[in-house]
Image (cartoon, rainbow, N blue to C red; front, side):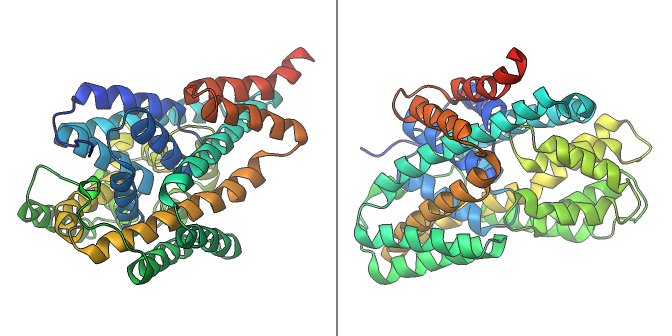
Length: 399
Protein backbone atom coordinates (compact mmCIF):
# COMPACT_ATOMS: atom_id res chain seq x y z
CA UNK A 1 0.00 0.00 0.00
CA UNK A 2 1.26 3.54 -0.72
CA UNK A 3 2.30 5.58 2.28
CA UNK A 4 0.18 8.64 2.99
CA UNK A 5 2.17 11.88 2.98
CA UNK A 6 -0.44 14.58 3.49
CA UNK A 7 -0.41 17.40 6.04
CA UNK A 8 -2.26 15.23 8.56
CA UNK A 9 1.00 14.46 10.31
CA UNK A 10 1.41 16.35 13.55
CA UNK A 11 3.88 19.21 13.77
CA UNK A 12 4.93 17.98 17.22
CA UNK A 13 5.95 14.66 15.73
CA UNK A 14 8.12 16.46 13.17
CA UNK A 15 9.62 18.64 15.89
CA UNK A 16 10.52 15.71 18.13
CA UNK A 17 11.92 13.60 15.31
CA UNK A 18 14.12 16.32 13.84
CA UNK A 19 15.31 17.44 17.27
CA UNK A 20 16.62 13.91 17.78
CA UNK A 21 18.24 14.02 14.33
CA UNK A 22 19.68 17.46 15.05
CA UNK A 23 21.52 16.16 18.10
CA UNK A 24 22.70 12.85 16.61
CA UNK A 25 23.34 13.43 12.87
CA UNK A 26 27.14 13.59 12.73
CA UNK A 27 29.29 13.24 9.64
CA UNK A 28 28.18 15.88 7.13
CA UNK A 29 25.46 16.01 4.44
CA UNK A 30 25.95 12.52 3.00
CA UNK A 31 25.70 11.00 6.46
CA UNK A 32 22.59 13.11 7.13
CA UNK A 33 20.88 11.42 4.18
CA UNK A 34 21.63 8.09 5.80
CA UNK A 35 20.20 9.25 9.13
CA UNK A 36 17.03 10.55 7.44
CA UNK A 37 16.58 7.31 5.52
CA UNK A 38 17.01 5.18 8.62
CA UNK A 39 14.63 7.23 10.76
CA UNK A 40 11.96 8.44 8.32
CA UNK A 41 11.79 5.67 5.70
CA UNK A 42 12.71 2.52 7.63
CA UNK A 43 11.55 3.35 11.17
CA UNK A 44 8.67 5.82 10.89
CA UNK A 45 7.67 5.18 7.26
CA UNK A 46 6.75 8.79 6.62
CA UNK A 47 7.57 8.35 2.93
CA UNK A 48 8.26 5.41 0.62
CA UNK A 49 11.66 4.57 -0.82
CA UNK A 50 10.57 6.04 -4.15
CA UNK A 51 9.35 9.30 -2.63
CA UNK A 52 12.50 9.69 -0.56
CA UNK A 53 14.73 9.14 -3.58
CA UNK A 54 12.76 11.67 -5.64
CA UNK A 55 13.10 14.31 -2.93
CA UNK A 56 16.80 13.55 -2.66
CA UNK A 57 17.28 13.87 -6.42
CA UNK A 58 15.48 17.23 -6.45
CA UNK A 59 17.65 18.54 -3.62
CA UNK A 60 20.84 17.30 -5.32
CA UNK A 61 20.04 19.30 -8.46
CA UNK A 62 19.24 22.58 -6.65
CA UNK A 63 21.70 25.01 -5.07
CA UNK A 64 21.72 25.08 -1.30
CA UNK A 65 22.28 22.66 1.60
CA UNK A 66 20.98 19.37 0.17
CA UNK A 67 20.44 17.55 3.48
CA UNK A 68 18.63 20.49 5.09
CA UNK A 69 16.52 20.95 1.96
CA UNK A 70 15.63 17.28 2.15
CA UNK A 71 14.62 17.66 5.80
CA UNK A 72 12.57 20.77 4.96
CA UNK A 73 10.75 18.89 2.19
CA UNK A 74 10.08 15.87 4.42
CA UNK A 75 8.63 18.14 7.09
CA UNK A 76 6.51 19.88 4.47
CA UNK A 77 5.05 16.63 3.19
CA UNK A 78 4.44 15.34 6.69
CA UNK A 79 2.79 18.37 8.32
CA UNK A 80 2.54 21.26 5.86
CA UNK A 81 4.34 24.59 6.18
CA UNK A 82 4.52 24.41 9.96
CA UNK A 83 6.07 20.96 9.61
CA UNK A 84 8.69 22.33 7.20
CA UNK A 85 9.58 25.15 9.61
CA UNK A 86 9.65 22.72 12.55
CA UNK A 87 12.01 20.40 10.65
CA UNK A 88 14.39 23.28 9.88
CA UNK A 89 14.40 24.71 13.40
CA UNK A 90 14.71 21.34 15.14
CA UNK A 91 17.48 20.05 12.86
CA UNK A 92 19.50 23.28 12.76
CA UNK A 93 19.13 24.90 16.20
CA UNK A 94 21.11 22.25 18.12
CA UNK A 95 24.09 22.59 15.77
CA UNK A 96 23.95 26.40 15.90
CA UNK A 97 23.90 26.49 19.70
CA UNK A 98 26.58 23.82 20.00
CA UNK A 99 28.74 25.61 17.46
CA UNK A 100 28.64 28.86 19.43
CA UNK A 101 29.40 26.99 22.65
CA UNK A 102 32.18 24.92 21.07
CA UNK A 103 33.73 27.99 19.51
CA UNK A 104 34.11 29.53 22.97
CA UNK A 105 35.65 26.32 24.31
CA UNK A 106 38.09 25.36 21.58
CA UNK A 107 40.90 25.08 24.11
CA UNK A 108 39.06 22.16 25.73
CA UNK A 109 38.57 20.40 22.42
CA UNK A 110 42.24 20.77 21.58
CA UNK A 111 43.19 18.39 24.41
CA UNK A 112 43.69 14.65 23.86
CA UNK A 113 40.32 13.62 25.33
CA UNK A 114 38.46 16.23 23.27
CA UNK A 115 40.21 15.14 20.08
CA UNK A 116 39.46 11.48 20.86
CA UNK A 117 35.76 12.34 21.30
CA UNK A 118 35.71 14.12 17.94
CA UNK A 119 37.40 11.08 16.39
CA UNK A 120 34.67 8.86 17.86
CA UNK A 121 32.03 10.96 16.13
CA UNK A 122 33.73 10.27 12.79
CA UNK A 123 33.36 6.55 13.46
CA UNK A 124 29.62 7.09 14.05
CA UNK A 125 29.30 8.54 10.55
CA UNK A 126 31.02 5.50 9.04
CA UNK A 127 28.61 3.05 10.73
CA UNK A 128 25.51 5.05 9.79
CA UNK A 129 26.46 5.51 6.14
CA UNK A 130 27.51 1.84 5.80
CA UNK A 131 24.11 0.77 7.12
CA UNK A 132 22.36 3.14 4.71
CA UNK A 133 24.36 1.91 1.70
CA UNK A 134 23.46 -1.68 2.50
CA UNK A 135 19.76 -0.96 3.04
CA UNK A 136 19.29 1.37 0.09
CA UNK A 137 21.25 -0.84 -2.32
CA UNK A 138 18.89 -3.76 -1.65
CA UNK A 139 15.81 -1.67 -2.43
CA UNK A 140 17.02 0.80 -5.04
CA UNK A 141 19.34 -1.51 -7.02
CA UNK A 142 17.21 -4.65 -7.53
CA UNK A 143 18.67 -5.64 -10.92
CA UNK A 144 22.01 -5.91 -12.70
CA UNK A 145 21.60 -2.64 -14.61
CA UNK A 146 21.02 -0.52 -11.52
CA UNK A 147 23.76 -2.25 -9.57
CA UNK A 148 26.03 -1.38 -12.49
CA UNK A 149 24.95 2.27 -12.36
CA UNK A 150 25.72 2.37 -8.64
CA UNK A 151 29.18 0.82 -9.10
CA UNK A 152 30.03 3.11 -12.02
CA UNK A 153 28.83 6.17 -10.09
CA UNK A 154 30.91 5.27 -7.03
CA UNK A 155 33.99 4.66 -9.18
CA UNK A 156 33.59 7.96 -11.03
CA UNK A 157 33.21 9.93 -7.81
CA UNK A 158 36.28 8.32 -6.26
CA UNK A 159 38.31 9.26 -9.33
CA UNK A 160 36.96 12.81 -9.67
CA UNK A 161 35.77 14.28 -6.39
CA UNK A 162 33.93 17.61 -6.61
CA UNK A 163 30.46 19.05 -6.20
CA UNK A 164 30.01 19.21 -9.99
CA UNK A 165 31.01 15.58 -10.43
CA UNK A 166 28.18 14.59 -8.08
CA UNK A 167 25.69 16.50 -10.23
CA UNK A 168 27.04 14.92 -13.44
CA UNK A 169 26.83 11.43 -11.91
CA UNK A 170 23.19 11.98 -10.92
CA UNK A 171 22.44 13.33 -14.42
CA UNK A 172 24.16 10.31 -15.95
CA UNK A 173 22.06 7.98 -13.81
CA UNK A 174 18.92 9.76 -14.98
CA UNK A 175 19.96 9.46 -18.65
CA UNK A 176 20.71 5.73 -18.36
CA UNK A 177 17.42 5.25 -16.53
CA UNK A 178 15.46 6.92 -19.36
CA UNK A 179 17.16 4.75 -21.96
CA UNK A 180 17.18 1.37 -20.26
CA UNK A 181 15.07 1.22 -17.08
CA UNK A 182 11.42 0.27 -17.28
CA UNK A 183 9.41 1.27 -14.23
CA UNK A 184 5.67 0.82 -13.78
CA UNK A 185 3.87 4.06 -14.61
CA UNK A 186 0.93 3.05 -12.46
CA UNK A 187 2.88 2.91 -9.19
CA UNK A 188 1.33 5.32 -6.69
CA UNK A 189 4.28 4.99 -4.31
CA UNK A 190 6.09 7.51 -6.54
CA UNK A 191 3.55 10.29 -5.96
CA UNK A 192 4.64 13.35 -3.99
CA UNK A 193 1.70 15.50 -2.96
CA UNK A 194 2.01 18.99 -1.53
CA UNK A 195 -0.90 21.07 -0.30
CA UNK A 196 -0.47 24.01 -2.68
CA UNK A 197 -0.67 24.67 -6.42
CA UNK A 198 1.89 25.31 -9.14
CA UNK A 199 0.81 28.96 -9.12
CA UNK A 200 2.00 29.20 -5.52
CA UNK A 201 5.23 27.54 -6.60
CA UNK A 202 5.73 30.23 -9.26
CA UNK A 203 5.11 32.95 -6.65
CA UNK A 204 7.67 31.37 -4.32
CA UNK A 205 10.24 31.26 -7.14
CA UNK A 206 9.53 34.93 -7.88
CA UNK A 207 10.22 35.76 -4.24
CA UNK A 208 13.54 33.91 -4.51
CA UNK A 209 14.55 35.98 -7.55
CA UNK A 210 13.39 39.28 -6.06
CA UNK A 211 15.38 38.74 -2.88
CA UNK A 212 18.45 37.74 -4.89
CA UNK A 213 18.14 40.96 -6.91
CA UNK A 214 17.38 43.32 -4.02
CA UNK A 215 20.03 41.96 -1.67
CA UNK A 216 22.69 42.29 -4.38
CA UNK A 217 22.57 46.05 -3.67
CA UNK A 218 23.65 45.60 -0.05
CA UNK A 219 26.51 47.94 0.99
CA UNK A 220 30.00 46.51 1.49
CA UNK A 221 30.46 47.72 5.07
CA UNK A 222 29.33 45.40 7.85
CA UNK A 223 25.67 45.75 8.80
CA UNK A 224 22.44 43.80 9.08
CA UNK A 225 21.41 44.41 5.44
CA UNK A 226 24.93 43.56 4.23
CA UNK A 227 24.91 40.41 6.36
CA UNK A 228 21.59 39.29 4.89
CA UNK A 229 22.81 39.94 1.34
CA UNK A 230 26.12 38.14 1.74
CA UNK A 231 24.63 34.99 3.22
CA UNK A 232 21.61 34.88 0.90
CA UNK A 233 23.86 35.05 -2.16
CA UNK A 234 26.14 32.34 -0.77
CA UNK A 235 23.17 30.05 -0.10
CA UNK A 236 21.65 30.76 -3.52
CA UNK A 237 24.75 30.17 -5.61
CA UNK A 238 26.46 27.14 -4.07
CA UNK A 239 25.96 23.61 -5.44
CA UNK A 240 26.90 20.65 -3.28
CA UNK A 241 26.47 22.35 0.09
CA UNK A 242 28.63 21.48 3.07
CA UNK A 243 32.31 22.28 2.66
CA UNK A 244 31.75 23.65 -0.85
CA UNK A 245 30.21 26.83 0.60
CA UNK A 246 33.29 27.69 2.67
CA UNK A 247 35.16 29.61 -0.09
CA UNK A 248 32.05 31.72 -0.71
CA UNK A 249 31.69 32.48 2.99
CA UNK A 250 35.37 33.31 3.31
CA UNK A 251 35.09 35.70 0.40
CA UNK A 252 32.02 37.32 1.99
CA UNK A 253 33.29 37.86 5.54
CA UNK A 254 37.11 37.61 5.48
CA UNK A 255 38.07 39.26 2.19
CA UNK A 256 35.73 42.15 3.00
CA UNK A 257 37.53 42.68 6.31
CA UNK A 258 34.52 41.90 8.48
CA UNK A 259 36.35 39.23 10.49
CA UNK A 260 39.90 37.86 10.59
CA UNK A 261 40.98 34.68 8.86
CA UNK A 262 42.01 33.27 12.25
CA UNK A 263 38.49 33.69 13.66
CA UNK A 264 37.04 32.19 10.50
CA UNK A 265 39.24 29.09 10.76
CA UNK A 266 38.55 28.75 14.48
CA UNK A 267 34.82 28.56 13.82
CA UNK A 268 35.36 26.13 10.97
CA UNK A 269 37.36 23.89 13.28
CA UNK A 270 34.52 23.92 15.80
CA UNK A 271 32.05 23.07 13.03
CA UNK A 272 33.79 19.75 12.44
CA UNK A 273 32.75 18.50 15.88
CA UNK A 274 29.03 19.20 15.76
CA UNK A 275 26.01 17.30 14.45
CA UNK A 276 23.63 18.88 11.98
CA UNK A 277 24.23 20.94 8.83
CA UNK A 278 27.55 22.57 7.96
CA UNK A 279 25.56 25.66 6.91
CA UNK A 280 24.99 26.29 10.64
CA UNK A 281 28.53 27.68 10.52
CA UNK A 282 26.78 30.84 9.33
CA UNK A 283 25.39 31.48 12.83
CA UNK A 284 28.91 31.61 14.26
CA UNK A 285 30.03 34.03 11.55
CA UNK A 286 26.96 36.24 11.98
CA UNK A 287 27.57 36.43 15.71
CA UNK A 288 31.14 37.78 15.38
CA UNK A 289 30.63 40.16 12.44
CA UNK A 290 30.58 43.70 13.94
CA UNK A 291 27.17 44.89 12.73
CA UNK A 292 26.58 47.28 15.62
CA UNK A 293 23.71 45.12 16.86
CA UNK A 294 23.43 42.27 19.35
CA UNK A 295 25.46 39.20 18.32
CA UNK A 296 22.35 37.05 18.66
CA UNK A 297 20.59 39.13 16.01
CA UNK A 298 23.59 38.82 13.69
CA UNK A 299 23.67 35.04 14.17
CA UNK A 300 19.92 34.76 13.46
CA UNK A 301 20.05 36.91 10.32
CA UNK A 302 23.03 35.03 8.91
CA UNK A 303 21.47 31.64 9.65
CA UNK A 304 18.05 32.44 8.19
CA UNK A 305 19.35 34.04 5.00
CA UNK A 306 21.88 31.24 4.49
CA UNK A 307 19.13 28.61 4.37
CA UNK A 308 16.27 30.67 2.91
CA UNK A 309 17.18 30.50 -0.82
CA UNK A 310 17.52 26.71 -0.81
CA UNK A 311 14.19 26.29 0.94
CA UNK A 312 12.43 28.68 -1.44
CA UNK A 313 13.75 26.74 -4.44
CA UNK A 314 12.60 23.38 -3.05
CA UNK A 315 9.17 24.75 -2.22
CA UNK A 316 8.88 26.23 -5.73
CA UNK A 317 9.86 23.00 -7.51
CA UNK A 318 7.74 20.47 -5.58
CA UNK A 319 4.29 21.32 -7.07
CA UNK A 320 5.80 21.37 -10.57
CA UNK A 321 7.42 18.00 -9.93
CA UNK A 322 3.97 16.49 -9.33
CA UNK A 323 3.17 16.81 -13.04
CA UNK A 324 6.64 15.80 -14.23
CA UNK A 325 6.59 12.60 -12.19
CA UNK A 326 3.43 11.41 -13.99
CA UNK A 327 5.52 10.92 -17.13
CA UNK A 328 6.76 7.31 -17.61
CA UNK A 329 10.14 8.62 -18.73
CA UNK A 330 10.44 10.49 -15.43
CA UNK A 331 9.85 7.25 -13.52
CA UNK A 332 12.63 5.58 -15.49
CA UNK A 333 14.93 8.55 -14.84
CA UNK A 334 14.17 8.35 -11.12
CA UNK A 335 15.13 4.66 -11.12
CA UNK A 336 18.51 5.58 -12.60
CA UNK A 337 18.94 8.46 -10.15
CA UNK A 338 18.18 6.12 -7.25
CA UNK A 339 21.01 3.83 -8.30
CA UNK A 340 23.39 6.77 -8.79
CA UNK A 341 22.59 8.04 -5.28
CA UNK A 342 23.52 4.63 -3.86
CA UNK A 343 26.85 4.98 -5.67
CA UNK A 344 27.26 8.49 -4.26
CA UNK A 345 26.76 7.17 -0.74
CA UNK A 346 29.14 4.28 -1.41
CA UNK A 347 31.88 6.63 -2.62
CA UNK A 348 31.43 8.92 0.38
CA UNK A 349 31.62 5.92 2.69
CA UNK A 350 35.22 5.45 1.58
CA UNK A 351 36.24 9.05 0.90
CA UNK A 352 36.07 11.07 3.09
CA UNK A 353 34.35 9.07 5.85
CA UNK A 354 36.56 5.94 6.01
CA UNK A 355 39.80 7.71 5.10
CA UNK A 356 39.39 10.47 7.69
CA UNK A 357 37.89 8.32 10.44
CA UNK A 358 39.25 4.77 10.49
CA UNK A 359 42.92 5.05 11.46
CA UNK A 360 43.61 1.64 13.02
CA UNK A 361 42.35 -1.91 13.44
CA UNK A 362 40.86 -0.80 16.78
CA UNK A 363 38.81 1.89 14.96
CA UNK A 364 37.63 -0.70 12.45
CA UNK A 365 36.53 -3.01 15.27
CA UNK A 366 34.59 -0.15 16.89
CA UNK A 367 32.90 0.55 13.53
CA UNK A 368 31.95 -3.10 13.03
CA UNK A 369 30.23 -3.20 16.42
CA UNK A 370 28.54 0.14 15.70
CA UNK A 371 27.34 -1.18 12.35
CA UNK A 372 25.94 -4.26 14.09
CA UNK A 373 24.07 -2.04 16.55
CA UNK A 374 22.26 -0.46 13.59
CA UNK A 375 21.91 -3.31 11.09
CA UNK A 376 21.56 -6.33 13.40
CA UNK A 377 20.12 -5.07 16.67
CA UNK A 378 18.26 -2.07 15.10
CA UNK A 379 19.24 0.28 17.92
CA UNK A 380 18.89 4.06 17.82
CA UNK A 381 21.85 6.02 16.37
CA UNK A 382 22.07 7.71 19.78
CA UNK A 383 23.44 4.45 21.26
CA UNK A 384 25.94 4.29 18.41
CA UNK A 385 27.13 7.81 19.27
CA UNK A 386 27.58 6.85 22.93
CA UNK A 387 29.45 3.64 22.01
CA UNK A 388 31.85 5.22 19.51
CA UNK A 389 32.71 8.22 21.71
CA UNK A 390 33.15 6.00 24.80
CA UNK A 391 35.32 3.51 22.92
CA UNK A 392 37.52 6.31 21.54
CA UNK A 393 37.99 8.15 24.86
CA UNK A 394 38.07 5.30 27.36
CA UNK A 395 41.73 4.26 26.74
CA UNK A 396 42.85 7.83 27.52
CA UNK A 397 40.66 8.10 30.60
CA UNK A 398 41.92 4.78 31.96
CA UNK A 399 45.55 5.77 31.41
